Image: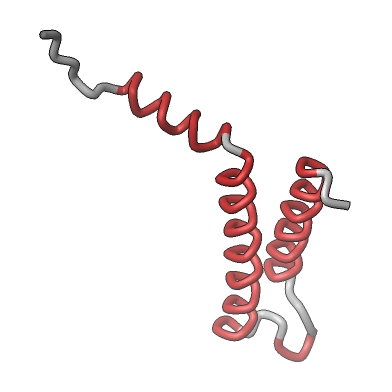
Length: 80
């Protein structure tokens, strides 16, 4: 009987298997896009960096990143 110790190689392989699956990758990237969008909204509401000047650079950058992730998902999955 051979005992194996769970090491870095096993965890690396598990992470690779998670990202290799198309469903998991899609869900993780979609979650990241939602998180970026919510962070943008919270940044606008809490810090009011937009104020009288409108939307600030941070909010725009977060929304642009969220749109970039969604665009990547569309290209990667061939959903369009």
